[in-house]
Length: 177
Image (cartoon, rainbow, N blue to C red; front, side):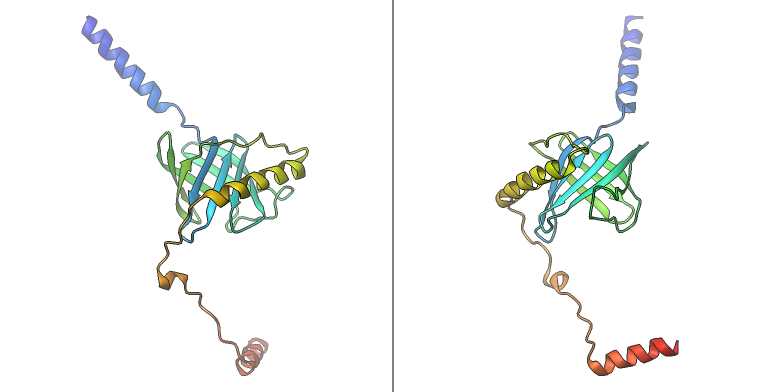
C-alpha cells in the first residue's frame, strides 16, 4: 500500500507541474543574424521590443492564449506597427533560460533570459519611462557583441533599376491598365 501511495503521489505531482502554465513574463534578449541586438519585455499586459537599429520602441498589447500569446498594435503608445496585425506567438520550446517562439509572420524567434530587468511600465508617464528605457538599452547595446552572420548573398539588397525610360513605361502601363 505504501508503494502505491508513493507512486500515486509522484504521478499527481508530475501531472500538476506539467499542467502549470509557463510564464514568459520578464526580460529577454537576442542577437539577430544581421548583427543587431534586440531586447523584449513581456508583462501580463504588454509585449515590448527594443531594436539596436531603431530609436523607436515596439509597444504592443498582449493577450495570453493556451500555448502562447497574441500581440497587437497599441496605437496610442507606439510608432512601430506589426507587419501582420495581430500576430500569434506560439511557445515551441521553453526552459528557464531560453524560449523559442513561432510567429505567424516571422517564423521562429529564439529568446534568451536576460540577467537584468526594466522598471515597471508607466503608461501614465510613458514619455519619461520610454526615455529612461531607451537610454539604458543604448548603454547595453554598446557592450553586446552581436556579429553579422549573414552570407554575402543574404547581405545583397536587390535594387530595382528604374531609368527615366522605364519609369515612363511603367507610368504609361499603369494608365492603360
